[in-house]
Image (spheres, rainbow, N blue to C red):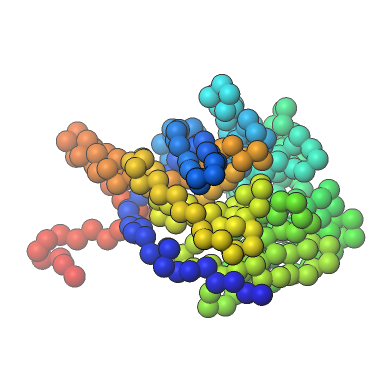
Length: 325
């Protein structure tokens, strides 16, 4: 049966601001009979530039991609100590989308080399040494389903295609053209979820990587490109500065958590939940207030470069009144 998520609950303001800095926040989860809430947000990246793609390594460690020294490396944040260690330091490239490999201590991640080569690698958790997982394909996003089966999106022309790669049988099976970036193992099942972008509406679907069978879970309102599964069942969707939790059977009213009281959290683009369900990590763009403050400070300091960096690359600047629209 096809379920439709009510569009009305997503009609929440979501302004776009001309900047690209992102931060990773960690929040604690409170569950009780009265509902479900998030509290005590902490900026765990606290870094100028790109900080993104958080994934829980275990209940005490979060992996994420973070900019340093002009490149993007894999950071490991320890919740108990509040400290960051770096798993990678790759002068010839940058790493993205880190995930713990099932039944292993190692980590998988996509590496984009300075030469333009983009491949999927395996990283030793102790040394950071890497070995190639997939040699030829330009992997966008991935889930290692087992030691021999990889569910991945492959960059093809102007889209991403969903591919199941069987290393033992040396077979690649294309499940569908034009899918989104969000791939996840579904808890307590043999399935992997993905977002189909093929038709007029986005669809959350499940895939059995061994049989190739797919099933519709529900439709998703336009503009949502990320989701994650709740360990005890159900899933979460981010929208603006809110997170919406849906029940596993989609028969209960969604729980809407509004994080607008936290001024540093704005426009949530990614979310991840710890295996225990005790913590939630999210990615937020810089708040408008922080961007404006940067502009004021750079203007007062006469720093033109810093002032311009507050805007996105495609902003058009015109001289008034002679050069106007």
